[in-house]
Image (cartoon, rainbow, N blue to C red; front, top):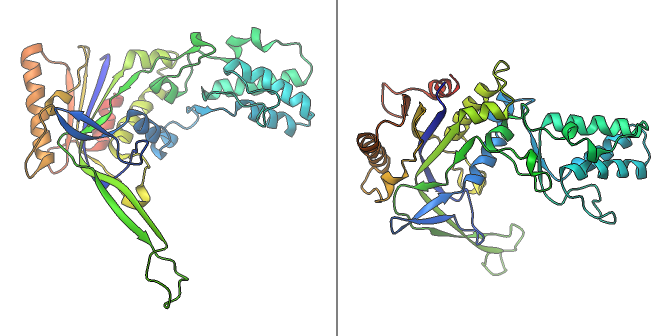
Length: 352
């Protein structure tokens, strides 16, 4: 089996603001001495993980990032007739294994201070232990960490993107997928959208002014996105489970989501529901490498997508000449090219 799967995508976004900074403007980066638009890897992974593609392909194998596990335990016990104080005590004891619990006098006393990424198996184990404690069994959750926390399981999104448990680092999961921030292949200028809203009930004899004035930044461009999957680590994170098909489903869903799912920022205002126009998928055992260097010199010209594809291809070929091939097999999708693979072909290539 090839150890590494690498995906390179070029996607055109029309005027939009799918990933904002602290001022509300599109995120940017200075690359090659010029300003580029940027979409953070965090925004991309969140969009993919919560997409219909992931939820349908990986039903039953998706984790939950939450502070509310303890409160879910409390409500579970209340629903079974356990009294409030006992439910809270049990919930806090178990939730404390997953993260630091808020103070007893806090309005959300069963919440953890941090978000915790929990697999279905861990959630089930927490509820099962809560039932045991409610029934009077003498169990110390602090001594049953291996029952409540898992080092491997079939939570595909945790296996792909990893997790960190500050209170229990031995149960951390190293991400099998590395995702770069997407950047435009060319220089961009962030523009301002000055807009107004009219008060529908304003009388004609009043002033003609707007009821609201606003300003929002936006930008447009061809984005390069790079992902690298360590398939050996992904299999390990999933407990070495290959027969259930979870690993294959996760890889196919990842490819499909990366190509078709955009972050949700300002989508109602811009409808920037983009699709990748070019995808290069590579499999092999050689050391992975990004092709972002193809765009250190910003692409220019009337056809930015064609220029970006040409720059990426030339740079890849030059790296192969100097360093040797970085893949054993590859698949290529290019919208508008008759011999191109389809997205279904790319997903199947990633799964196989």
